[in-house]
Image (cartoon, rainbow, N blue to C red; front, side, top):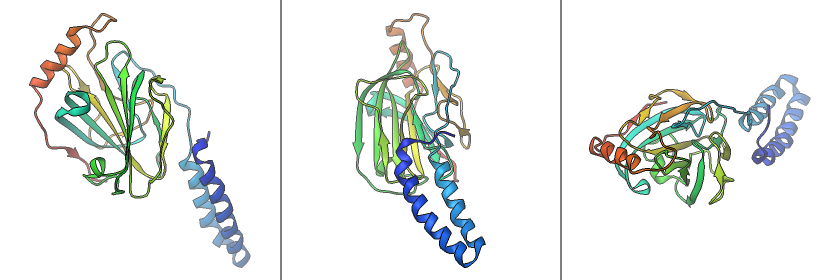
Amino acid sequence: MPIAKEGLREIALATVVLGLLAWGGAWIYWPLAIPFALVWIWVLSFFRDPTRRGTFERGDICSPADGTVTEITHVDDYEPLGGPAIRLGTFLSLFNVHVNRSPCSGTVRSLSYRAGEYLDARHPESGRRNESNTLLIDPDGTMPGPIVVRQVAGFVARRIICNAQANQHLTIGERFGLIKFGSRTELVIPQCDGTEVLVKLGDKVRAGLTVMARQPLPASNMSSPATDDACKVGSQKTGLVTPLRVPL
């Protein structure tokens, strides 16, 4: 299993510390070394970086993270998108792959880091109050946009890594970063007339493989007022809805 290079420092540190503890435990009584060996294996597993090759259709938006869907919220007016939107929150446990991947093919318009608190990633206020990094992506072709991906730190996770840069083009499913040791990732898409959410609360998703939503697209490959009109029609049907969450 490939290992994310961003975790090499932690793996080296764990190897030294846990190796010494295991050696000391084994010197006294060999079974005492087993727990330290298991923790070392877990550290390796945490930074695994599996190869992902998903198959997608036009309009598909894939999950940016591995984990459990814990929020599906319809927002009446989401400022970064300039209109109604759907926010999909995914909780990453300590046993999930923590590599983040692009939900669509497009160009990174901007990145915005915000310092904050370190509430548990399952806390209802974690998305608003925790340390976070936000990518604004302009999708290729006629897909409505922009699309927002937010990396949100958790109680244990206190290191957000984002390798993407402004004006960089990302392919759907392409890795762009990682959050260390438990976290939350949010995907925010425009709410248009015909937008489909293909996951439900409690679903397990995988970055670069699971299609979370699908946007309606006009037949033309060129942007047209029809796309904007579809989003305007959708906004007339969308009100502010209380966030739906699932306890873990």
